[in-house]
Image (cartoon, helix red, strand yellow):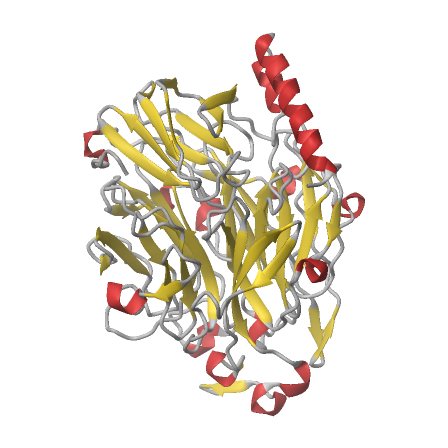
Length: 594
C-alpha cells in the first residue's frame, strides 16, 4: 500500500470536518478516496415529450483541441481503422472529472512514426481543461488503443491501463498528481494489437483484475497480401481481419502489491475460436453475485464468459443465444454495453456491428437465456447503413428509463466508392427508452452536434460539469475529440451514487445499486467498462422523472454485504461507504455553458 492511501484517509477526515461545519459543497473538493424482485418502471409518471437544446459540442471552448491521430489518410492498414479510446477519471481527487485520451501514430511509406502522444486533461474550477500530460509524468507517442481506468491497489487513486500495438502500459497514480509507468513490473508483457480492456473483481477478493480483448497479430515486416492493399470494386482498402492471425483475449488476476498474473488458461479461457476481439464489458448476467464477461468479436462469434465462482469461466454465448446475429451468422461486433434496459432487474446486452448487419440487442429472459429484440425494441431504426462503434446506455433526460446512443463511422475513407449508400463520416444514433425495453429514435431532436457526421470511434460517459445529467466524450479519427455537454432539457432531477469500498474494491466495481422510487425499482451495476475502447465514470446515475427523490436505496457489494439507506432527496450526489455510512452529500450545480 503506497503513501496515497494515507493521503486518502486524511482527505476523508477533512470531508467529515467540512460536513460537520455545514460546508457540504467544499467537501466534494476534498473527497475521493437478490432479496426483493425488481418491478418494471411502467409505474413511472408519463412525462411525454420535452424540449431542450440537446447536446452541444464544447470541446474547443473548454480546451480539448489536440488532434487524435490514426495513421495515414487512406487507412489501408487494419490498425488504422479501430481508433483510440478515452477515459473519465478524477486523477487529482479535486472533485472534478478529468479526461484522458489515447492516441495513435503516423504511418507513411509503410512505416510507423511517433504520433502526437496520449493526453491527460485536468479540469479547472471554471470547467475548462489544461493539458496536464507533461507534469503528470505520462508519456507515450506510440500506437495506443483502449483505455481502462481502475484503482488497482484500492488506495483511492485511479490508475490508467492502455492497450497498444505491442505490450500494454499501466500508469500507476502516485496520489500527488503524477503517474509511474509500471506495466512490465506489474506482469503485463504480452504484445499484439490490443483493443478494449475492462477492470473487474472476478474472484471478489477486493482487488481489481483486468480482461484484455486483443484483435490481431500485426507486424509491419509481415503485412498480409505482400504489403499491398486489398482491392474491392477497384478500390484499394485495408485487408480485413481474416487475412490476419487472431490473438486470444487475456485475463489477468491481481495478486496484490501492484502485481498481476496472466491466468487465461487456468481460468478456462484457453479455447477461443477466431477471437478477433474489439469490445469488452463485465456484468453479473445471471444474478449469482459473480461478475461475468462479454466480448464482441469481429467476424466471429461473441463470447459470454460465465463466472463459475471458483476462478474459472465457461463460454455460454451460443447456448444462451447471444453469440450470433438473427440469421445465425457471426457479425462484426465492435462496441458493447450491458444494463437493465427493460426494467426487470436483469442485464440486457447491446452490441454495435458493421454496415448492413444491423446492431444486436438481446433481452435477458433469466435462467441464463437471451432473445434478440433489435427489431421489436426499435433499435433497428437507422442502423442498417451505419457502422457502429461505441454504444452506451444512459438516462440522458432523467425520466427514469435508460436510453441508448451509438457512435458511427465507416472503416474505409472511400466507402461511397464501394457503395453509393455508404459514407465514411456518419452521425450519432440516439434512442430514447421507455424503461421497458422499447426505444424511439430522437437524434434529430438533439441538435446539430449529434447529427454532424464524423469518423467516430470510442465514447465515455459521465457528469463532466456536475449538474446532475450525463455528458459524453467521443474520440474521432484524425480530429480533436468531441465533448457533448447535455443541455437536453431534463424531465426531472437525478440521484447519483458513488461508492467507497472497504472489504470490496475501492470504487465498488461490480456492486449493484437498487433505487426504489414510487413503487418501481431501478438497478444499476457499478462499472467503468462497456462502450468501446473507453472507460466511463464509475458513478451510478438514476433519473427520477417527476419524483422528488428515492424512497430507498439498497447496495449489494462484491464482498456480499448489503447496505440499505434512504429515503434520499434528488438533485445530489451521495458518497456511500461500505457499511452504509453516507460520507458526503453534494448538491448538483445549475447547468453552465462555457
